[in-house]
Length: 99
Image 1 (tube, rainbow, N blue to C red):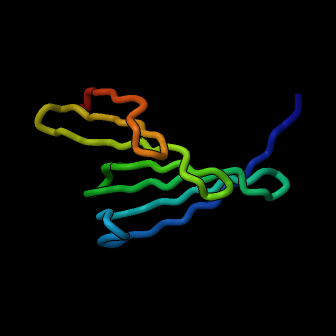
Image 2: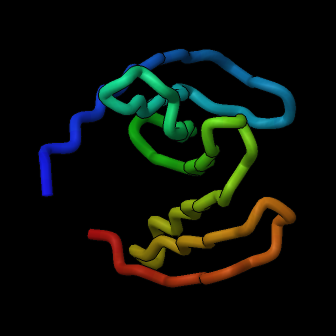
């Protein structure tokens, strides 16, 4: 056993649209080993204020590993969370209460 050290970089952006996605804010987080090698990264897509709408997970070669989508339904006070593989196939879908 030993101490594992990692470092992270954060990139923040805001705007109207990128490709077909509309968003108010995007955060990209990259993870590096103690030696400085890129391990992987993820991108967080936000809509309307603070509502997280999508997380995309990538490996060090920029290959999409999976996505997690968040659909908010305020009237029902619930959120649908969908996990997909790189081909868009649904791996898991959960309905969670939101207060």
